[in-house]
Amino acid sequence: MYEILLTKEKCAKAKGLGNFYRVPADNRDLSYEKYFKYGDTKRVTIDKFNFNNTCRLNHEETKAKIASLQYIQNELEGIPNLV
Image (tube, rainbow, N blue to C red; front, side, top):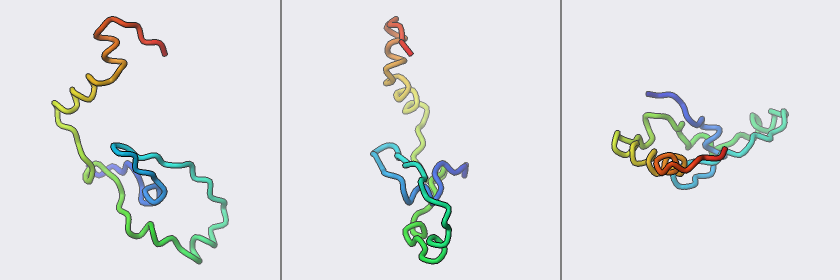
């Protein structure tokens, strides 16, 4: 129930894109002094993203989401899926 999907640190850098987040690569150097000496106040205000604080689909919503996938639509219509 409380499995963390996105940590506080990653939430601070993530870009919200509607129904999902894009998390950029962590390209920090290993000089931790600037993080401990100067701090990062943005991280304090953001909570973790986990199964308890996110929208969960019910059975019908899950079926509709799966049915909307192009791969599934192709399978139902007998169109081969090229990988």
